[in-house]
Length: 239
Image (cartoon, rainbow, N blue to C red):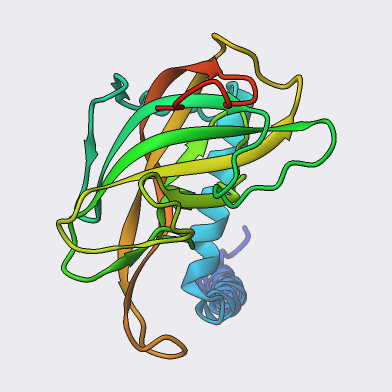
């Protein structure tokens, strides 16, 4: 009859449990080391990177669904000839458009194959200081032809005495003639011109220009006006 040693099973069970415990502890240490390295690495990544990554993901997802929808700009208010456009700098009223062979005193000198296209505009300086009719914040840039985008009037003159590039005094109305040299066949009698009227912003210079000034015009309204071809202009008034 054999004798059973009762201590052996308990001893073996304890040893197995101890071995499992040691293996689990080693695994936990390895896992902790791995995630500790990951946390340390992520701490060194600038926060802005995450924002950039998130933005990239959004853009990729948006592109997959047809891209970001663009919002059309609202149409500009449309005025009638003779209706003023008023802002803090000027009151501007487009009266008429004239096409003429030559217009002495306008400041424009057409070459062979060119004529002069002029706008007759009433302007009033609504600011507190005299304002030039030319330059970035002047009438030559604030009154633009849609058919000649980005092309400032080549000449600005007073209608009454042909003073070139006049200064406009506060609250003193003046009628101006803004002129461009254009190809002779570019415009004709009865053609419709779209005139864009812009608003400039008032800036205060702090470095190179130590003063206040008007600049950076932005289109604010339009006027449609018919071209009057007066030929050589010798047959009578052009107003």
